[in-house]
Length: 320
Image (cartoon, rainbow, N blue to C red; front, side, top):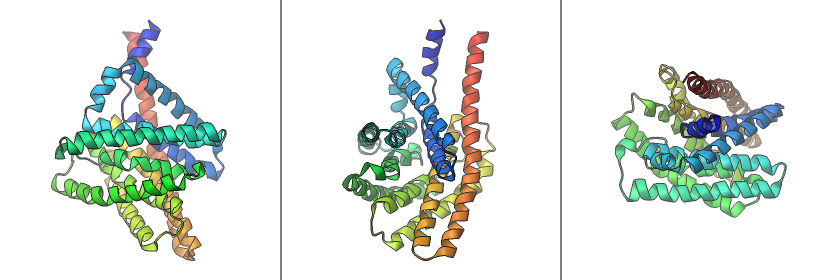
């Protein structure tokens, strides 16, 4: 009976937990250079356990997964599965380069396949403006996680291709998404939290661009960070509204965008300091520190509430 109960619970694993894992893992990578390596290890191990549970869901409850994947918004969030695979690959790489690179490549390949299927279903086959929400960036620009963590993989050609693809995707999707949010604003419901995702794609582009382009164009770098900064202000200004809602899985939309935003600010700070703009670079570094402070609180809040949902589900099962 307990085994059957555990198997049944796998079906209820929420899709948004996947991008939450990406956010938590990315945040742990920000704490590690500060000397808090245990945070990174514990977070990566926890992510690996949850990922194994999600693989169990895909195997034991394929119909449920198929139904979720048929829905545009959850389907876009399923990209979190491949993104965390790439991050775990970079983590394993530190201990076993061959296995780590294989895991990273698997995540990259699966994401590319997911992207093709998503484009066919939601762009070519039929477009619905109501489901055209910022979570699309998780699929379209999420593949750039491979270039955020992939420098040690030593695949410059693949990296540059993904960087330029990401810049083109951003140039096409971001203006359309801004117009969509202005003309058809999202004011209520779980989709409201997807507005925070607007911070993620430009941050991914900036980090990836600086990682793989040996002679970066300063105007591209400045333009990308300007968009990152404006997007960050937009998210911060909306935080009171975000947290006016009772917790639901949609809060996952706050995690990875805020975490990758820290990486973008750190990268921009280093770029400015190396270019001789120390005062400006140090100012951006302080912004990154504030981001780390706020993001840690947000990710901790979301992860804790997901954990409490799990605890309550077990208590409900025991009382039944």
